[in-house]
Amino acid sequence: MSHNSIIDGGTDPKLFMEAMMGEMKRVMRLELEQIHEQIKWMENPRVDCNDPPSTDRYRT
Image (cartoon, rainbow, N blue to C red):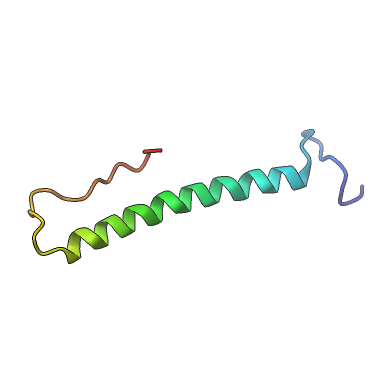
């Protein structure tokens, strides 16, 4: 079996890796956006303590 052949599941390994990388980038972008939002909230002294940043992990 060569490196370019289709694996048993019928999926091209290169296409599978591209899809996985795209999904990981999307998830990381959402996580970093959340982290940046929390940092801004913590650094801003005028923000009311009763109004924490959004922690909705599944927004798109």
